[in-house]
Length: 156
Image 1: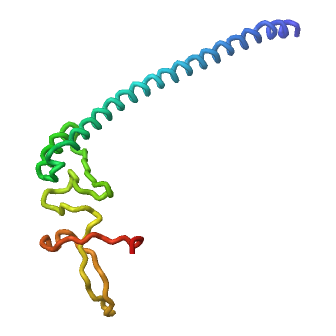
Image 2: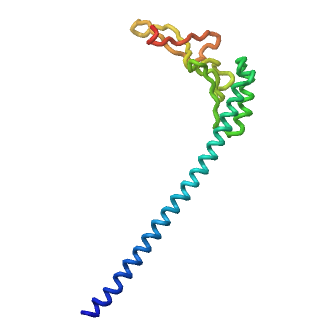
Image 3: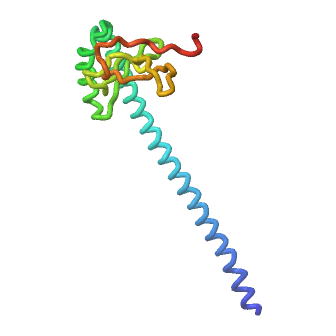
């Protein structure tokens, strides 16, 4: 029995010491991994920030073009197409006025309505019950019919 206590008394501190060393190595490895992840994230953030600054600079140059100032959207579309070729097929450029109405979209075909989504065409129709109502039509319904601005209920 004394021999068992002697062996346990000498090996138990060694086992606890070894467990402490393993735990300290684990904590240090975890800190190192966290540091590597943070360095990687910082690097990616710097690259993305530089790319965003480059894109913003390009968009600022686009905003100063004569074609956009003169509202020549066909000429502006050619310039935007050249700009978007740098970013692949999924790039989109939208231009809106100060009221938030969309004036130009690079994904809208050239032959579509050159007006905003806040403009629509209305026509007065009679429902089956004889009540008058307004219905919205596509801008392709009659391209010669002028568009009327939508009136907000808050302004009435």
